[in-house]
Amino acid sequence: MTDFAKNARSAAKAMRALFPPTPLQRNVHLSDRFGADIWLKREDLTPVRSYKIRGAFNAMGKALAAMPDQRRFVCASAGNHAQGVAFVCQHFGVEGVVFMPVTTPKQKIDKTRAFGGGAVTITLVGDFFDETLAAAQTYCLEHGAHFLSPFDDAHVIEGQASVALEVLDEMGSAPDHMILPVGGGGLSSGVIRYFDAVGAGTALTLVEPEGGPSLTAALAAGEPTSVPITDTFVDGAAVARIGEQPFDVLRHTDPAHVLLAPENRICVTIGEMLNVEGIVLEPAGALAIDVLESLSDVLRGKTVVCVTSGGNFDFERLPEVKERAMNWQGLKKYFILRLPQRPGALKDFLDLLGPEDNITRFEYLKKSSRNFGSVLIGIETTHADTFEGLFERVLARGFDFRDVTNDEILAGFLI
Image (tube, rainbow, N blue to C red):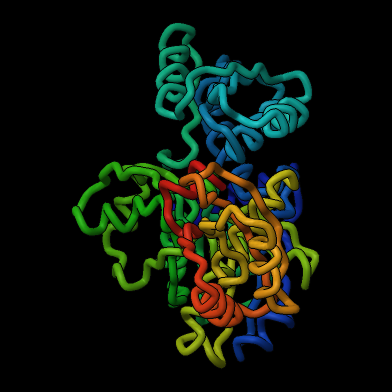
């Protein structure tokens, strides 16, 4: 066994002072659906509902062993890393200073404060994470505090590797395939290093959100490179630049084994796991499950482990999740209707709706001319193909309309 594997096992043993191994559960629903033996490694069931507590615990413990007088630790995070650091600060009895963007939802601030139990001070700085990170690092320099990176740290990677160790211990053998989410790369690089160290021979698929493909960009460039975040929905994995140390491990990854998950499709997965299985997953926590459909031919008949990396889901986001899921499934559309300004025109349009068509939004925008007005209409239905018939009937009746469902500019202003 290599030093890395030994250190990961020591880290896992020490973690038992905080929490037991997270459950590895066979999921009957997914197994039957995809014709495989599918297991979920439930990292959403740690004390802070994400795997981030592992790396934070190991890195802080190693820092205290090397610097016993260090009593102040700092991190920059708007989510799971902050909560993991706060929980570990309380465990070790040290002071934590957590820097968060000003735009961080109150729910996440309150949870971080609760996990810290009085040991943590929260500082809100900057509208964007880069500003928050710079403020945290400046604070460390000025106050001699120790900065805890969320992923670009050898001891964090070592701590995250305990996920792989627990999977092997709980299964008794290596799974055929494992699917992991990727953000900054701490979890995936730790798992890969551990599997390599013990000769597990498990095939790996890594998953990034489509709106933040930092590993995909790094593999194409041969080095970490910054990418624009085009969609922040998967906030736990939408990282603009993968970590330097994780990429040293991940640079040999076959790009074909890195999949991108569309954010709207992830919403379908979140809803399915909540409604069918009663499992609450945050967007990043659903990444591994979301790509099962894309891998169905590869996985059939095999033993598969999906890491559900987090369950810190704000239920105030449920309307957005439903909206985006229906968009992906083609069950909801928005369009602008040019409606004649005459008595009975609206009734003529309503008569064109089918029995499964439901108007969820109706808003007059303005009069286009003296004789016509523009109306924003949202319609939900139960089968995507019903829209084709509806649009044919609308055009045949002489109404002019424009589908703006996927028009980023107009939808951004109107919907």
